[in-house]
Image (spheres, rainbow, N blue to C red):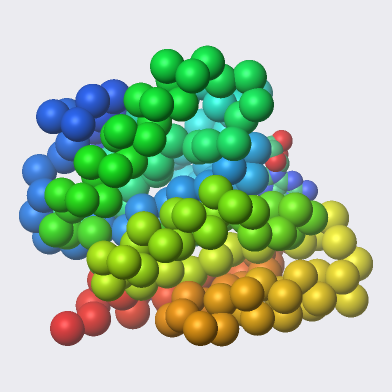
Length: 196
Ligand SMILES: Nc1nc2c(ncn2[C@@H]2O[C@H](COP(=O)(O)OP(=O)(O)O)[C@@H](O)[C@H]2O)c(=O)[nH]1
Ligand SMILES: [Mg+2]
């Protein structure tokens, strides 16, 4: 089993010029506020306090960089979809994301965090379009699967895969609370990090 025993926080970027040096390889995590992104990062990295599980969703407009191994980074992108965010903040988010996806050579793939009870939304689809247009990998984690019964969880997984069937996007169920899907997610990430 691949884990990241030496994972550590590197730096935060609030502005385009503050991104970590663009070398090696990195995997970005994106998702709506409150989709379970921080929880998923902590579960995958096996570090409970790594990414903060937020009580005030939508507040953080930072790109957080973590080092999993030398020249291998995990990037926590700021969440989106929070209703009460002022226009100025939303525009800053958009500008920062566009910059990130446009310049980032070391980005190999995007892990998109989607609450399994909501399913893929318009903004989620937009994130997938961004990375696919740049020939990067993308994988959807359908989080909080413990909140659905088995049958509904399988239905959401089927629907998500169907929605992505024209693309290379893959999807899986995930639950931090029930230890579901950690290994599957790590395998996807390892494949991306080692791909030629
Ligand atoms: N039931 C359940 N709740 C979860 C799971 N993952 C996250 N949550 C809850 O969802 C809320 C938002 O989680 P957080 O990781 O902060 O989401 P973020 O805003 O996307 O980073 C918190 O109350 C978490 O405890 C999960 O797998 N199962
Ligand atoms: Mg968070």
